[in-house]
Amino acid sequence: MNTQMYHQNQSSPLTISFSLGRRDIQLLLPRGRPVLTTLCHSKLKFYVDMEFWLSLISCIFQAVLFVLSLYLVDSGLSRNHPVTVRRRVRATIAVCILSFLLVYLLLLQSDGISLSQYMNVLGFRTAGLLAGTVTPCLLVLMLYTGYLVQTICDQSWNRNLVWSRRDLMARDYVVAPFAEEFIFRGCMLAVLCSAMEKYRAIFVPPVLFGLAHLHHLMEWYRGKLAVPLSHACLGVILQMTYTSIFGLFTSFVFVRSRHLVGVILAHSLCNLFGLPPVEEALQSPWKKTIILCYLSGVVLFCWNLFILTDPALFN
Image 1 (cartoon, rainbow, N blue to C red):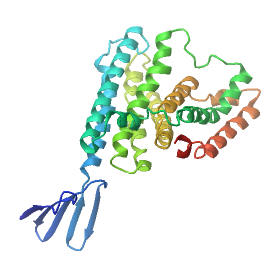
Image 2 (cartoon, rainbow, N blue to C red):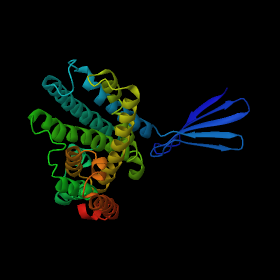
Image 3 (cartoon, rainbow, N blue to C red):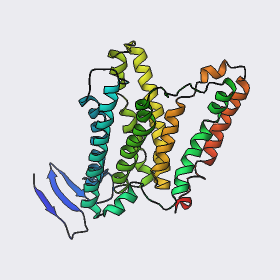
Image 4 (cartoon, rainbow, N blue to C red):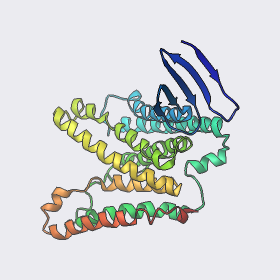
C-alpha cells in the first residue's frame, strides 16, 4: 500500500492518498463541511470535517458531564431531599462553568473570538433584549392556551406548583431552566453553528437533551418509586419525546433571536405548567370549550412561530 500526504497551501484541504488493492483512495480534511462519502469509478473519496466532529464530541461530552454530575454527588436520598437538592444545584453550577470554559477555548482556538464576542454568541447581549425576552414567553403562552383556560374553568391553580419549599422552587424554576438552556442551547449551539449551518445545528442539542433524561429510568425502576419496568420505560420514552420537541423549539428560537434569557424564561414557564392534563379536560364540564382552546392554542403557536422569531425583530 503506497501512501502520499500533501496540501497546496494553508487554505486548501489536507489530502492523504493511498492505494488499497486496485482502488485509489483519497482522504480530504477540509474546513466547514460535514462528512461526505462519494464513489466515482475506481476512486473512493472521504471528506472529513475535523471541526464538525470536534464540536459534536464536545456537545456529547457536555451532555454526559451534565448527567454524570448529578450522580457524582448522589447522597443516596430521594431527588427532592434537601441534601440532594443542594448537592445537585452545586454540581450543575460547576458543570455550567466547565462548559463555559470548554466552549470558549474551542472557539478561541478556531475563530480567535474575544470574551465580549463570546458572550454575544452565548446569547447574553443587549440589542433586541426586550423582544428576545418577551416573544418566547408569548409563544409558550399561546401553546398553553387550553391549559390556562382549563385552569380557570376548573379553578385548579395549584396543580403543578411547589410553593411549599423554596429549594424546590429554585431548582425547578431557576437553576434547572438556566443550566439546561445555557449548556444545551447556548454552549452547544455556539460550537455547532461555528462548524455547520445553523438550521442543521439545531437538531443536535434536542437529541442530546432528550437522551439526558434517560437516567430517570433507573430512578423510577429501582429508586424510591419502584414502578414496574414497563411503566418506567413508557414514562421515560414520553419524557424524552416531549423534552426533545421542546429542545427543538428553544433551539430554533435561540438561533433566530440570539438571546438566551427568553428561552430560559420559556423553559421556566413550561416547568411551571407541566404536561397539559388532557385526561382531566375530557372529564371537565367545560370539555368542549377547553378542547377548542387547546386546538386554538396549537394553531396560534404554529401561525406565529416564524413571525415572532423573525431575526429582524432582534437586531
